[in-house]
Length: 211
Image (tube, rainbow, N blue to C red; front, side, top):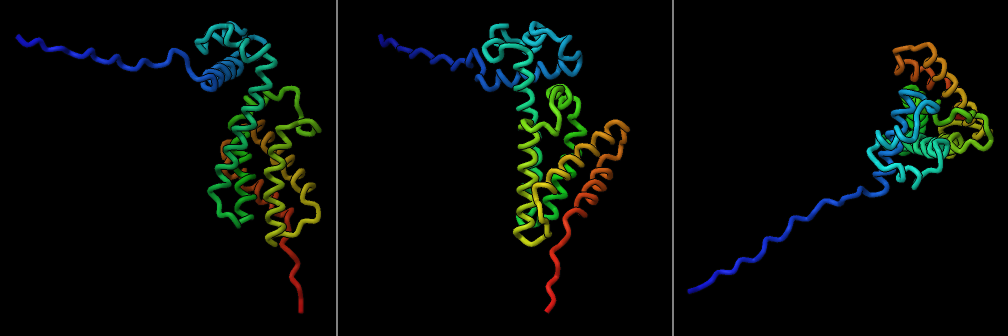
C-alpha cells in the first residue's frame, strides 16, 4: 500500500512586528503636530502624544529628550517640506525660463506659507526671519538666490547685488503673506500673483547696447 507523503505547507511570511524607524518617527511627529495644533504645545503632554501615535512612551524618549527637542525636529521637517514643495514647482518650469521660475517661487511661497502658517508659528515661536542663525530662512534664501543668480548669468535681468535683492524679496513675500493671513483674505492666488508682479519689478532687464 502506497503511502502518500505531504509536504508541510510553508507558513506565510509574517508582517514585521515593528515599523521601520523612519516611519515610526514620522508618525510620532505627525501625532505631536496634530495635538499641538489642536491644544497648543504647553497643554499637550507626552503621554497624549504617544497615545495618539500608538507607541510606547519609551519610543518618544528614544528619539527626543523633551517636547522642546521634538519642536526642533518638527521645525526641520517643516522647512524640508516647504523646500520640497518649492522645488517640485520649480522642476515643472522650463530650465532657462528664469522669469517663470522666480514667479513660481514667489507664488508657491505665498500659497504654502498661507496654508501652513499655524504649524510655522508653533515650530518657530522663538525664531524670527532676521535671526542670523535662522537655518530655515537661510535654506529658503539660498534657493531664491540661486534663481536670481541664474537669471543674472543668463542675461534675463541686471542686478548689482543679488543677495540684497534676494533678502528683500524673501522678507517682502513673507511679510506680505502675513498681511493676507491676518486679513483672512480668500483670493490667495490673485494676491500671490500681485506679490510676484511687484517683486519682479525689482529685477530690471539688462541695458540695451547701442551701436
